Length: 402
Ligand SMILES: Cc1ncc(COP(=O)(O)O)c(C=O)c1O
Image (cartoon, rainbow, N blue to C red; front, side, top):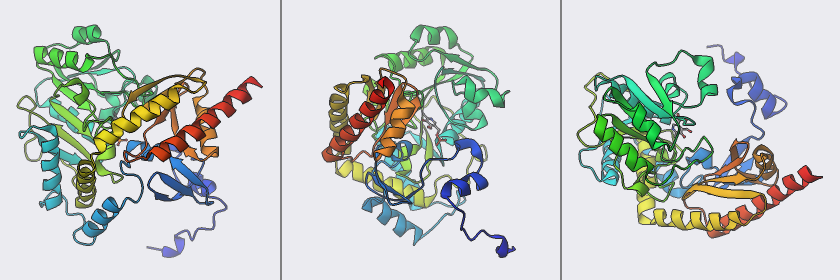
């Protein structure tokens, strides 16, 4: 390799270097982050931010948490990646932990690297039922790979890449009647998010997941719950569907599972879901021991520190404070996955103003600010969030009125 061709840096700004060397699918982000500690991150110009997005709901213990850095450092110094041609204790430990968390000793886990891959695995698995049809919901988000995009209920994201998988239909989220009409004995699977995170933290009416369960039972369709965004304690339960007391046939996980490292999982529960036979599916990096070591450490930490309770308490503290603010219509979501619905469609400007004022949040749509801080966020950090958010919102609303 001609190493003289390797760039030695020296580009005028990170933004120009980014735009001249990366695909433009994310546009050029406004800041470059270089360091993090807990819920704080610093950019390359030394500015500090309160991170209330946590890598889009991934860093469940924040940045550089000692439990994660110790587990990852020890693992990478002991055994790196080995593929699935061999077993590793970390993979077995994590599969057993997930089995325990589901409460189902018959649960079986497939590890991958992302949410899209977890949903791909579920789609492929559903074909083993001998059925082809899939029912999903409008507004849903299940990933960007061809299969996961096929079941994503956002036409704008799908359109440039059509034709995608066939035999997929979409019904309005939360609408039991529409689902009942669409799901038949030919339906292989129904895929549902407990909360539509990417769609603006949309919560379905109470009883929805229980009704989906009934419809799947009556037709033999697999009930797949995409808990990629709502899993691993984010909503105050281990998995976002537990609030409704239902059990799906398949759970997909990613995001918080690796506590900041890339890791996804598809878990079958009970006897209804088919099982992959040797050779039917796989992933070179799936179940990487380093990512699994991080996940094991994060689960242990959540258990020992009773963080699910903290999540519920912190979520309630946030909702109570945010609901008071002028310019806020409602707050929806659960635990520490919250959507702040604004009275006017200025969410993108509010998000930008928060960044200027040292706070990271995002705006999945013009009316909604999403927050998904680390699960161990402190009371003081919540107070700081409320202060910066309320100031930023006021500034945007005043500017609008001026
Ligand atoms: C519910 C849900 N499913 C799937 C995905 C896709 O996950 P990934 O980006 O890891 O492929 C996401 C990502 O936002 C998600 O929120």
